Image 1: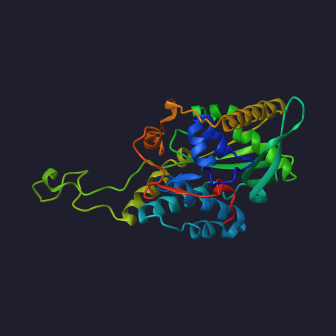
Image 2: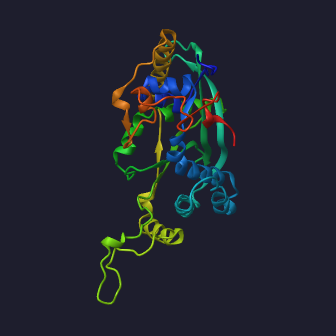
Image 3: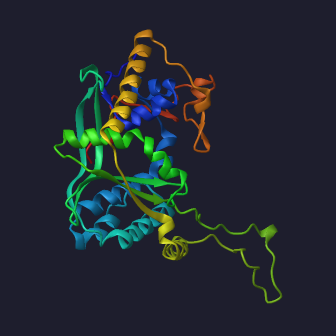
Length: 326
């Protein structure tokens, strides 16, 4: 029996899971299960996001200190260094931009309306948390700000930016900003590319090769790289190609484009309601492998693992942790 009270909120995270696989959606949002391994996978993005939240909330001359102070938690030393240097580079790249901050981490809860009839759903509501809302002091326009960390190529003209033309989250957040009392003119999409550098490990003794002077050949190491050595490599890489790691682009939405996105949300809400009434949540094998890793629930769906395994899953009545206040 489902011990969680079904939430009437449709968030971007929930919709993303539902589009990928309705069984995944059911396990996460119907039953309230969360894989423990997901916390480790998402940890770096969480660190950076906490730093960005602090950066935007702080006074302009205190931003870097605030961002670095927010990098706390269970991260290991190398993750912490990586997050700190990404935030330091972000500050150097964007600190001079003339934006007046109007809101940071603002949660919204808005009616889900049918774009054709204007009728409000009796089952679902739209919800989310806007990273920031700012005013561009150069022209007075009000903009959403959406932060993302990505391992993809985020350079101008890349597929990453092309895909944003249909990104439903941006459109939903236009509705969210309206619910918060802001008429926004666009979305400042703020992307941080994750450095591909990894801490260097010591060369296995059996693989080491020495020159005549007793030194190891280039590229070989007698000891693991320290966090500070890793930091030095990161600083050099980011300083050499800052545009590779920090990109911003403005995403606009016409009224018709917002309606298209709301149609997508409305239809997904209908599908989820029908699945709930039928007591069935179909699996989507095409979604078992995403982002280079297997779905954390793969073993459950294939019958090789159990949701009762406390070493792998936890259960909570709070199915929207992203909406909780820190």
